[in-house]
Amino acid sequence: MEDTTDRDHDINRDINRNIDRNEVVLSGRLSGTPGVKPLPSGDTLTTWKLTVRRPGRTRECVTETFECMTFDGPLGRSVADLRPRDVIEVRGTLRRRFFTTAYGRASVHSILADSVRVLERTVTVTFEESPPTVGPTEADPAPRPGTARPTVPRQRSPSGSPGGPARRSGVKGVREKEADRRARPSLS
Image 1 (cartoon, rainbow, N blue to C red):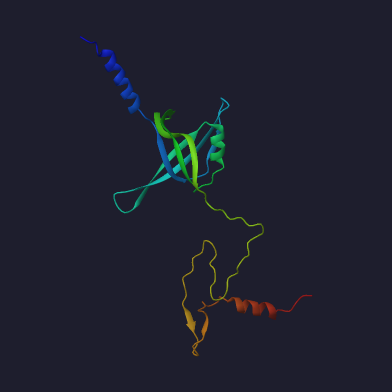
Image 2 (image 1 turned 90 degrees about the horizontal axis):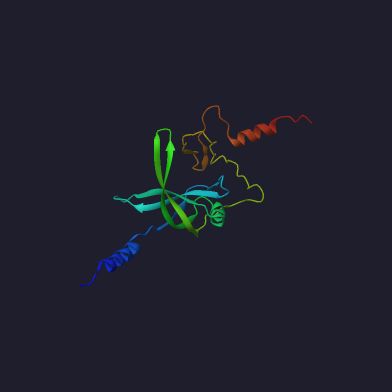
C-alpha cells in the first residue's frame, strides 16, 4: 500500500500558496496634499488619501476614502509632487495597523503602496502678472464677498429704452458718483 500523506501535504501547500493573496488596485482622486513625515529610523513615511467612487444602491454615486502610505523614498518623493484632485492608480497590499489611544487599543486599515501611476493631472493656471480686473458696471453690479443683495428687475423708461437698475433711496449709481467727482472743485 502506498503512503499518500506526503503527496497530499504537498498538494495542500501548493493550493494554499495559490489561494493566499493580498493585492490591492485602486484608482481614484487624490483628496488632499500628501504628507511627508521623517521617522526616527531615518526612513520617510509618505501618506495620502485616495477617494474612490463606487455605484450605490440608488442612482447616486457613493465615495469611499482610503488611506495610502509608502516607506519607499523614490515613490514617496513622486507622490509628494502630486496635486490634489489628480487621478492616480495605486497598487499595493492591505495592512492593518494597531495603536494605543486614550480609550484603549485601536486599529486601522491602510494601503501600503508598491507603485503609483498618474492617470490624469489637474490643470492649474498661474499668471505672470496680475490678472486684469473687471470693475462692476451699472447694469451688472458685482456683490461684495459676504454680502447678499436681492436681484432688482430692470425698469424701462416710457420710451421703451432700457434704463439702469431700480435704485433704492439714498444709493447712488456709478454714473452719479462719477458726475459728483467731476463736479467737485480741484484743490490744485
